[in-house]
Image (cartoon, rainbow, N blue to C red; front, side, top):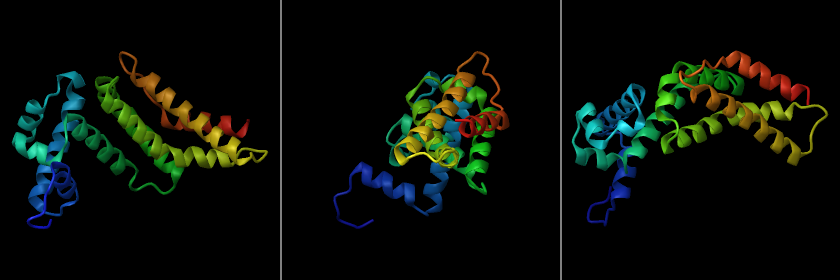
Length: 193
């Protein structure tokens, strides 16, 4: 960062997020790891900044240098995990399968965070990651659909997948999400439209 420039808190956070400084990366990783662990451990309403920084072993000022607020770190932790899950995917279907399987293994976490802003933002990100697979399915619907109908079919398929996931992990206890069955059902719906 430039010296003698007026630097806002947002500028500093943006710099630290892209920083390759090992110390900044360690603090950020500790906070993300702690956020994920706390979300998996109990209701999201019980997570506080104090509890998070204590679990991460960092100071409160360090937290605010890296994240705007508690939601920011929790959403970032979910995004980091989802990115890692799909990183090795060979194609959109493989990415969808990997993500759905991960979601299935994280049923307790999803039950603890649902409903919340963090859950909504996590769902929004899952939607982004699942969209290429649904777009591929929608593009294969026969007869070939006009562009506007293809986009609506893609959204319909995507919404259906997300609704089935939401139903599964909002139950008590959370239900299992069978990635292969869900993908087969969605693909079958696209083929028989």
